[in-house]
Image 1 (cartoon, rainbow, N blue to C red):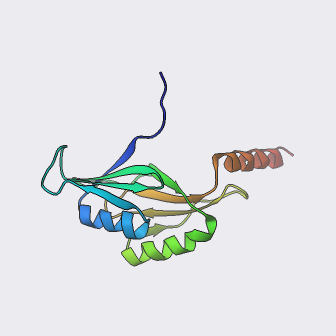
Image 2: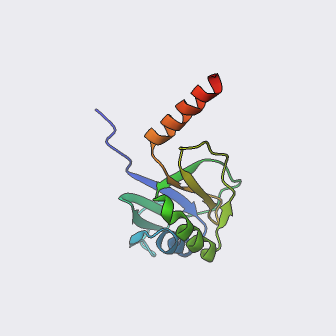
Amino acid sequence: MAITGLSHATFVVSDPERASRLFREGLGAREVYDSAGREHSLSREKFFVLGGLWLVAKEGPPLAEPSYRHLAFAVDAADIPLFRQRLETLGVEILPGRGRIEGEGDSLYFRDWDRHLFELHAGTLEQRLAAYAAADRAGAT
C-alpha cells in the first residue's frame, strides 16, 4: 500500500469563468471539463490540466482570510517575467517575494480573487536543501 502521486487540487472559487481565465490565460492550463448545469458534485466545477496536474475550480464562497497555504508550480526562471506580465494583465494580486538565500531558486507569488495563494517557483527540492545546508554551514563559522 502506497501513495502513488497527487490526484488533483481543488480551489473553491466565487467565479468559475474568472478562475478559468487565470488557469488558461495566466498559467497556460488546458480546460478539459465544465459541468455547466450538470453538477455531479457539490457545485459547478471546471477541470484543468496544467503541467500534468489535474486542477479543479469548484464554485463556492471565497476564503474568509488569506493565508500562506499555497500551491507552487515549477517554472523556468527565464519565464517568470512573462508569467508576471500575463498575471498583471489579468489583474491578480502580485505579492512581494519573501527573503531568499542564494541558490534556493526564484519565485513569483500571487493571489487570485478568492484569496488563494499560488507560487511559480524556479528551483528543485535538491537545490533548496543544498542552499539551506550551505547557509547553515556559513552561519556556523
